[in-house]
Image (cartoon, rainbow, N blue to C red; front, side):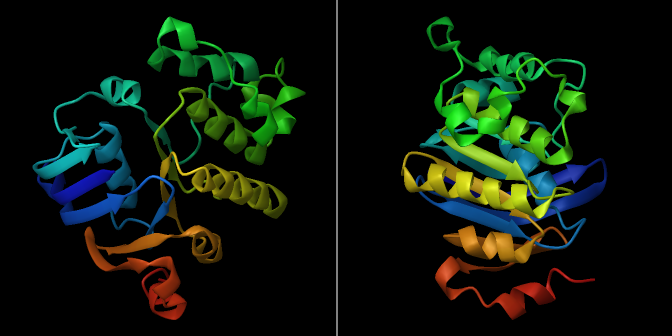
Length: 231
């Protein structure tokens, strides 16, 4: 389980997160919702080790993460798919996938065939440059690259941003399959409420760096949540 307790985060003198609490369990999707600029990405950056926290505690499977680097966290099975995908545009699809090997021992440095079962379009594009793919295909590649690391915790920052509806549905199906295996905790930052509502086992809504609503997916009041997601 991922446990986040009373996390404060600053950028210089500006505070971005205020006492944030969060849990994420294997076999569940935890959705983080809210409008732009409320701290969702800052929270994921704190969880992945790309941004230090000022106060509070972050733990994975009972082990504290506060002082660990992003690479150390990756070796513990924590994978982060950032907003905007950040694939290597000049590398081929295959080379992009192989960048996930950095977090793995030599014995595991191969691409599981399951990757191509989940994302069959990538198998036909292994020699194409990442920059030549469509936005939706790049998003699939970014998720596949994270899955190469065999994560126990998968964090996705707005995977539906700027991609076509058919691929949004494909990504939704992949996330559901990964969740239903019961082995992986998934933290999903999303602005597309219907997408999040279909997947959420639990959710938190953020506003101005704080958690203002939380609960189970079954009890989510979509209209109340929507009020925190519209400008």
